[in-house]
Image 1 (cartoon, rainbow, N blue to C red):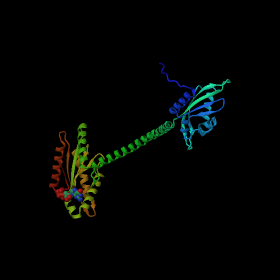
Image 2 (tube, protein in one colour; image 1 turned 90 degrees about the horizontal axis):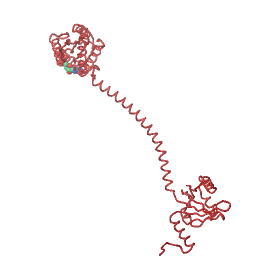
Image 3 (tube, rainbow, N blue to C red; image 1 turned 90 degrees about the vertical axis):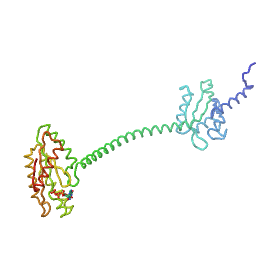
Image 4 (tube, helix red, strand yellow; image 1 turned 45 degrees about the horizontal axis):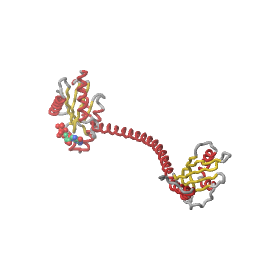
Length: 340
Ligand SMILES: Nc1nc2c(ncn2[C@@H]2O[C@H](COP(=O)(O)OP(=O)(O)OP(=O)(O)O)[C@@H](O)[C@H]2O)c(=O)[nH]1
């Protein structure tokens, strides 16, 4: 038994084919080159939002709905195909809808028959709605452009950020230096503090040993400073400490290291000086201080302990010795220097 499906008549097969085409493509068109007649499927009208069959069935209907910006391109492509300059007719363009907006479609067509003179006798085509796909492509295109711009600005941003970071780092380094400086400086007198002194002393002890150079150390303390505070007040006491530091700083060598040990006690490192020379230097200071009118009508004196660092000295041993010599200077009557 032959079970192949057959249409009983040609018209029936035409109806079936048209129904299938209407289902699988939005719009088909069939152009008769002899008469200029164009048959368009119901889907073609529906796709553009028109009532089926409202347009004249000729080529001008099609030409009139092509977007003006696409018109020349479409015509050129059509011309190339029907004149045999290109082998296929396949083109994307916009068609005007009933509401005046434009719909992106893809138009595919094939010549079905030629006239005796070689011109087209029949051409069948299909319009397919690609609007959403086209919009999505446009979006991607826009995004790509934006991305490129963004990449550039991102690049710039990175550069700007790097510069800002560099500035911040510089600021931070300055702050660290500042903090480091502050942590090494006595805030009242602006000279080195005990912490900084201890570091410096260790360094100088090592240096004197390495080069076998002398190194001396002095400590001095304001005599009876409690009386000054009690008589003139703590504020004047502070001013006196500041003035004393300025005086001493201005009368020591660049090489010498001057620090506040704490309270009204100060220390001096004399690199390259033997105890003999250190005694001369401290004597100069003692005299200067005692002759300096630190406040109107007020003079102060200081007691000094001096010692020289030996090969075997530990830092603690050094301190014990100058402390002891200062104690001796105090107990021997103040405003004097003792050395051990
Ligand atoms: N104004 C002021 N006074 C201070 C500061 N640090 C310590 N002093 C004072 O220094 C005085 C030290 O007193 P004492 O330790 O009794 O010694 P002194 O009166 O100097 O007597 P001698 O050291 O024995 O000569 C105290 O009154 C402290 O308050 C300071 O930063 N500012």
